[in-house]
Image 1 (cartoon, rainbow, N blue to C red):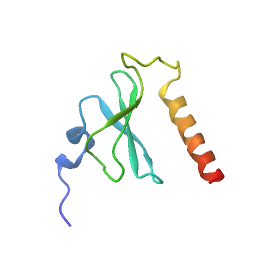
Image 2: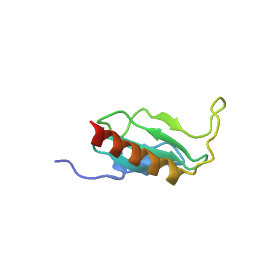
Image 3: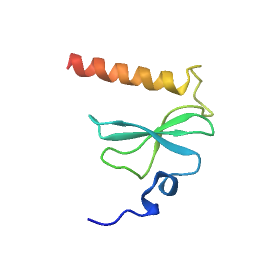
Image 4: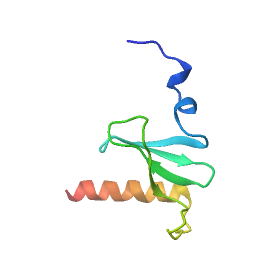
Length: 87
């Protein structure tokens, strides 16, 4: 097993103003927040780092919901739980 280095940290690997905020073990997907505009982004399943896809937040064509990031995460977790109970 290799040694840990400073190059393994979020600060080094993520774009500026991004922080990792959640992990969905069922999907194997990390969720990130861009602190400059509070948009949410997801990575590809099975990847800790790599290409990120915007899933919510300000954009030129999408209307805003008026929800803050914590509310969006809570709703996402609730919906995920309900879907898993139904299936």
